[in-house]
Every structure is written in structure tokens, then in C-alpha cells.
Image 1 (cartoon, rainbow, N blue to C red):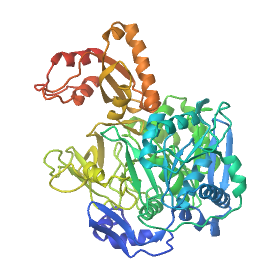
Image 2 (image 1 turned 30 degrees about the horizontal axis):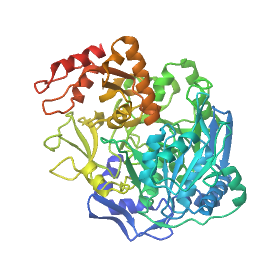
Image 3 (image 1 turned 90 degrees about the vertical axis):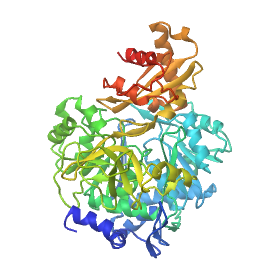
Image 4 (image 1 turned 180 degrees about the horizontal axis):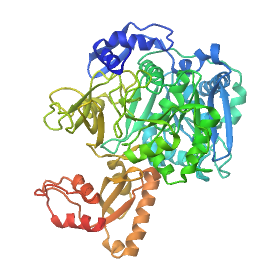
Length: 630
């Protein structure tokens, strides 16, 4: 289609024909009989009866034309190593890993939990898992043992894959001890643990019979060819856990066929990257962006994906731009937080390397402010494209789509709905459509397009209740984000409507953090809110009621208690959930009916008017929060 609007209109008005054309971008071993089965809303089954394989589309189908092209380039500034794999070499590594998994009993439908740093073996493991029809669940390496155990019990993996350690800012982060502790806590532990030993943690312990060294297993299967397991389009490809308004994380379940089609399409239409070109995503494979645009999207497209282990400022703040020059990167995906980190460094690093190949820099994860966008666009001389999406959707909901049409962009706006997404802004209480520039809840009229979550793993009822239960007038998917749309049709994201906060692009449920804090023996009650932060977008701030007030009676004791509470969060949830501050109070602001007034606490933290306080039970609780913040 010639324009964005025509393309978007057709994707909704003539969806079957539109998605049939998009489905031709991937290989099917058996054609689908029906484009979309939406007979049991809100569940959508895309490309019914079609059989394909995610790994085949990412690697095997390219061997005839680009076997010697680089598929994966891994650069680590942490261990000062670089490894490059052509499509043929990547195929060999993935076949070997698949053979290892099959040799220890992993088969179609089994779950494989991957808890690894940013190393090539993590990519091999993901691709090998889907190659044999198994289902992977990648857990970000920053999560602690208790969080990992909760994910083990929900996914019930047959095998876990981990490494001895990761590295961040030159500091070794042991992963194997956390793996061991999580398994001891889990009710449904895996039968085997496969370990990629990087020899970073010299004190690593292993358990005979359960723990297996990948370096010892791999040579036995080198050269083996493992046929792809052809699966029906709706067969789960992976589970990825995301925070919610309850303490229990939600296992987002992704299909195979729809996801493969969505990524194949988006790489060219949204990310304007052609086969053979290099794409660099700075995320982590533990997040959805890493799944979609470090691993699967670029490879399905026949591109070279650049995978980086390290910080954007080590060995110096020019490292990303050095990689752009070295590998001829044409499109790059990062976050506003990362750019704000670079903004604090010497501006000379932005022009130290030749970045003339870079056409677009895509930023997502939290709202993009105008000064940050202006600074990086002018400094590097690259077009910045803001885009908005969620773990649940797997690919962008809102974005400019330069592969279709080069539309004007407005700072602070992720532009327009992507094709396939029927977006509505609804009034929070009435459900009515809002007017231009009026705040509403951003919703999607089902069916959700290909690539979006198909359900919550093992809990269809929670899927319906959580995502489709907010409005009574119609069944719509709720993003739980506020947004506005201006008179020109551009959308602007305003923040969350629920108790999920966005820290540097990572979504964290306040309930998860609260539960971690309450694991401390002296905490009676706690409230956590997300507070605006100039660097990370939001940070968690905690207000805690202690059981023994003598332990926080003076500043020195309070400081000591605060450190203890943060250490407890590190142990229970991981450093990713650590609050920026823990304030101690004797009571939390509540209504007379006992409802915690989180919005009021948040407003006080951000020096805003807390609004109507007529329902508050104890005004002195509010004053304690106000005094603590000041």
C-alpha cells in the first residue's frame, strides 16, 4: 500500500486478505485453512491449521542464500570478547544444543527455563528449544531466587539452563548459587540443570546427577542434525513473565505462527531493515524487546543481529557508536533511559565514530521527553522514532512506520496505531470514546493482531479478567495506560492507570515490591508508589510501618533499617526491585473503608496537589508522608 493510512485501514477492514499477504513473508510446511478463528472471544487463533517452526524461519530457510552472511555478532565489553556466527555456523550451534536437549528428555510441549547472561549460548538455547517444539521461558538475570522459584513453579520446566555467572560493570554476578537456591525453594524443580561455564565464578558448586556441563555435553552431539518439529500455528513458542497488580507475575503465552508473521512484517515496515542489513538492539534477552528484536525478528528477516554484553559507557561512552560503525548498523533499538545516561557524558563521543549507515534510532520502554530526543537526534545525526508497546503485545502498538511511508513525527508521540491494532481511547468510568486531547484509557478492540499474547500460561480466566474486564459496555483489551490523541491523530502516552510502575523501561508491580519488603521481620505494613525520575522515568519509593519503632527512632537507626530493608528486597526480588528510598511512618494514608491512598502518596512525592481528601481516615498519616518526603 502507498500510505500508512491506507495500510492501517485495510488491515482492519479486509483483515483476512491483509494478513494472508503478510503470512507469505514466512515459510509454512502446511498452509493455514483459516486466517483467524475468533469464535470464542477474546481468544484469537491466527492461521488455523497452518504448520511452521520459529527456528526454521529464523535460520534454516536462509541457508540457501545467506549461509556465509553474519547472523549473530556478539560483543562483550565485560570480558573483552567478540564472537561472530554466520547463518551456517549458527545453524550448527543450534542443532548441537537441540541434540543436547533431546538427549536429556526434552520434547514437544516441554518447558525449558533459561536464566542466563547476554551470551551467544542463550540465543542457541532459545532457538534450540523452539526447534524441537518445546517452550522456553527466559528469566532476566537480575531476578533473585524467590522470584525465580515462583516462575519455576508456574512453568514447571523439565530443564533449566544457566551459567556460572554474568558480569556488570566489571563485577562478577554469580547465577548458579541463585539457581540452586531457587530450585530448593520450588515445589516443582527441574530434573536437570545445564550449565554454561564461563569460568567467571571459580567457587561454583555442582550437584552430581542433576547438574550437567554444556562444554562436556556439546562435543558428543557436534555435527548432529535435529529436524525441526513442525507445530500448528497456535502452539506456544514461549512464556515470558511480566508484573501485574497482584504479587503473582503473569506468564504471557505467545503462539508460533502469528508471532513469526508479526516479526517478519515489522522488521521491514516499522524498523525499515532489509535482509542482509545489520540491526542492533541494546536490550536484554530477558525482556520482550530482546526476544523480538535481538533474537527472532532480525534473524527471521535475514539480517545480522548485534548482541552486546556491557554498559553503554564502558569502556567509554562511544562503545555503541563504535559498534554501529564496525558492523554497518542501519537501525538501532534502545530506551530513553539509556540515552539519558549517555547525555551525562562527554558529547564528543557522539561524533567520534562514523555512524553514517544508521538511518533510524528507535526508542521505547517509557515516555520519551523532547530534550532527550533532540539531543540524540542532533548529536548522532539520526532520525529518532518513538514507539510504544508491551510484553503482552510482543511488537509495537503505536509507531511511525517508515517502511510503509515516511510520516512527520511529533516529539513526545509514538505517532499512530500500527496495522492490525484497532485502538480506542475510552473514558475510565463511562467507557465512552474521548474527544481530541482528552485523556482516556488506551484500549485495543479484539481480536488482538498476530504476535500478541494468546493467553496467560495455565490461566485463561485470569487472561480474560485482567485484560478484558475493565469496561462493561464492550469487551476490549486494556493496556492500563493513559493516553491522549491530538487533532492530527498522534497519540501521547500519559502513564499507568494501575499499580505497575515503569523503571528504566522495566515494568515492576508495586505489590511484588511490597511483598518483598514485608519479608523483613520488622515491617508491619508497606506502600510502594512509582515516582517520576528524570533519568529512569519512574523509581519506586516505599513507605513502611515498622513493628518495633525503637529501631527507627533516630536518623542513624532509620538509615540502618533502610539498608536492611533494601537488602531484603535484593534477596527476595532482586536489585531490579530495590526502592530508591524507604521512609518509615507510623501509619499509611487510607480511606475510612481501609483503601490505601497510593495516588495521594504519589502526588505528595511528586509535589503535586493530592486532590480530594475528604474520605481519608487519619490526616496525620498524610502529614507523615509529607514530612518524610520533605
